[in-house]
Image (cartoon, rainbow over all chains, first blue to last red; front, side, top):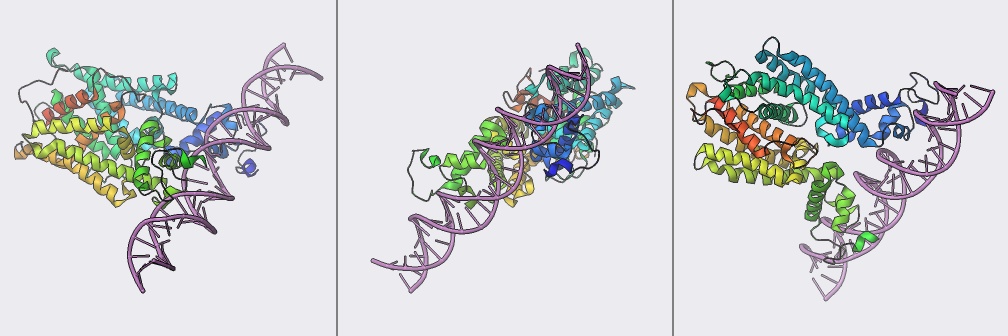
Length: 219
Length: 219
DNA sequence: ACCCGCATGTTAGCGCTCTTAACATGAGCT
DNA sequence: AGCTCATGTTAAGAGCGCTAACATGCGGGT
């Protein structure tokens, strides 16, 4: 019976009124603290001040809550990327670098979301909304790739999808391996953002995009 | 008492004789089947034909077994990469492409190992052997980077560490996002190996390494 | 040849989680 | 006012991680 009055904040009646939202917030907090595996359905319920069975009125099981968190993460991610890209203004190059920084900033500032999205083992097929949100986020990378490719002469244009996948892969690789401050991984001579920026400059140079005459950056 | 004779293979006495090895093999199988989270200490014990408490004579806890699996994974990984690199013979370029294919082949052929190494949330600090094995594996990437850089004129050489990190990040990014056959991720117009190969060619081109006159590959 | 120590395995049990079934409450529609 | 159904609670079963106390028998020392 201890869970009943553990959080004296706002006393409530038999019905919570906003349980689903609060469960998601609790899950996000727990994932952020203890990783996607440390998160527990029961503990989220405790945090929301309800019994361990209450969450089942809102989510079929633990995985569905995780998928919901991941979907919200992709929505926030999409918003962030789309804001950074800003339709390629003022020019595709600078917008593209904003996009890269936004990618890593999201992974860094929202580790709980990023965990749920990429490290919790949630399949994109878990729900249609999840898939859709992920697709919308990826669409930003693809748009950026297309805008940059448009700068090339027709006969030197790589497939936009391939280029977008490269961008995504390097961004995710850097975020996953070196993105978190002290995730037990390797210490770096440079920040993740700088690493990505340098990598992308070299990659674009390889495509023939960017400061045509400049040598690869000596970072 | 059902666990006692579940596996009638080789009857054994009170002592198992080779439990530690068999637990690792069982863990590897379970991780391969159900992901790093589906793996259970108790089930590994069941598979080995011992009581649920027996594993604690060989591993402090579940995480230590996971760390052991990860360390063995890095050892196998290192062996694979080192064989592929073969000290840069016959020339750094072709050896480098072998290395890339070996990276993805390992992620593809040994998903259980790769999961334990990168997706199970095992910190590299979990044991000194783990850290050492991971370092040895990474050293191969760094060696390859150095050999390729040596082809450049002195004043155009990027830092070898940075280049190795880029290679690792793109390889891991591709493996994590698209490496597994049907991991619930996105269907691709090309194989992961082709994607990595193309990405690396573009990247090297950006550094000024590779077929100097050829345009980016039209894959 | 004996015996004893210690590594290795077993039994029992605590506390936790996930999940379901049966029951309780009260908000909102008619 | 009364009913209904979404939303909450209680109770309970199964499984897991982990520990403490006990059992076995391999292998070295006498």
